[in-house]
Amino acid sequence: MTTLTQEHRETTPRLARVRNVEIFAAGTWHGQHFGAAELEQIAENFERFSRTVPPVIRPPVVLGHEEDQSWLRQSGLPAAGWVHDVWRDGRRLLAHFSEVPALVAQLINQRAYRQVSVELYRDFEHEGRHYGWTLRRVALLGGELPAVRGLADLPRAEFTDPETPCVLVTRAVSSTASLDSGARRQRIWACCERLLEQGKLLPALIQDGWLVDFASSLDTERLLRFGEDQLNQLDAFLQWLESFPPLVRFSERLAPVPQQADPALQSVLDYYDRHAAELGRLGFPRERFIQAFQRSGMSAAEFLGRAS
Image 1 (cartoon, rainbow, N blue to C red):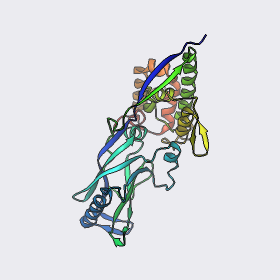
Image 2: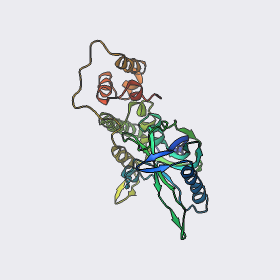
Image 3: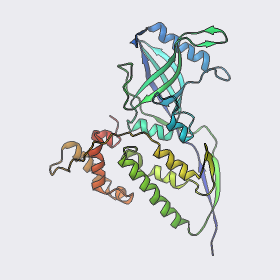
Image 4: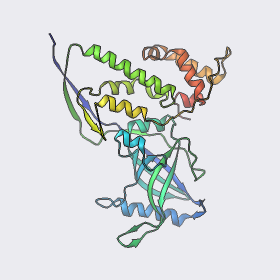
């Protein structure tokens, strides 16, 4: 006999903001000189076109300069955030980013994305008038080098209370749910481990268990349409994770673990030993954790997700 209970879960989107981002600077870039007047023009045009109702332009934050933004498109996210304010401070142009999705914020805080690059309209035209330099969007850069040199690294993202109301989800749970849940978590951890080896996830993104807990809460019965595909929420989320660009470029061969660990390796070893019970329970044996670090080519601080 199956016993039914009601599970009530309040789900709210986790959003973040990034404040005081240096997005542009005075100088000569791609053969074009930008001085204080041009920076002021960009800031003024942002105010002019983004504060109307509806906005004429609402510059998004995107991942890289690719036009199709396949990573965001496949995830169903409209953007990696939105430019909220723009102003000139001396020879720098600064901005606040708002409504940054949680996973993008995690990537920023783990330093997968460190710098930005703006895209500008040279002479934006609206209703027959020309307004000059106008912000189109801001790209977060990982391994790409920005054309504008000397900008500060991205500040850390700060999580905010969601501005959208809570959504109450009610569903029936059978007495076999614990078995289904265990199999589901095993599947999710296998996916995360594979993505870790491929360099698409950093250990710090999953060590606290938040990612797996979130994936485990997703519905596996009701089908939703994603483009031309019909998927349940869990399958759609795992496909989105699979679509991540590599955050870490692995070397061709794995060097053996030295008998005398260097300071960086020792730092990773110490980290694992301090979290051995939790990492082991989550399916990360010590040897695999160390191998992932050796293949990453990252510093210990970057690999462990610590602020530089």
